[in-house]
Image (cartoon, rainbow, N blue to C red; front, side, top):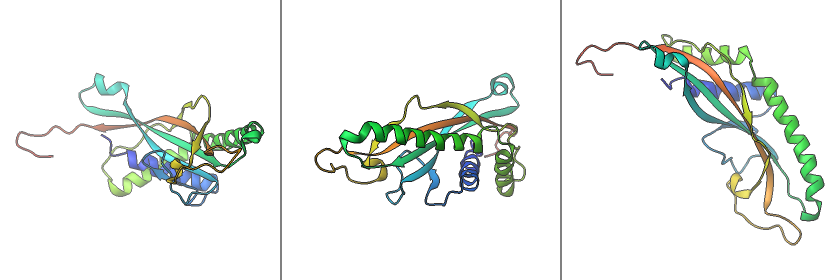
Length: 193
């Protein structure tokens, strides 16, 4: 039922790298919001956001109906003095919103991403049923959040008088609805899976 998750994540990562012109050290799949310490000032983390059961799952005894979701976290790093934070905040917010907009254009309702995920899955499992709907935006963080150096796997420390311990601004956007239905094989008594 969850076999498609890794293909969704890989397809989103590769699509973002291609359409946004990102290098591997700027965009990768992560298991949580902890990003590599070597990440630069701009980093895009592709994180699994689980799945929901589709409408046919409960209404039919013959298929697994799964709707896959993904979280895309955009981080923009900056160290600023506290007295300049308001101006820097607005500048970073404008920059991060611009990057979120680029992510939306690259992922939202893009059929090539769905086709790519299907090609990746078909290569490993040619008998699996394909994804039949593409990812679409489901929500975005209500507001960006300031993050400290721990998110970059670093030590927390102040930068001296007049500074904050924040090193980056982050905001996530979520996509869902990438649907895949797989026929349920009826197993004969004594058959192991």
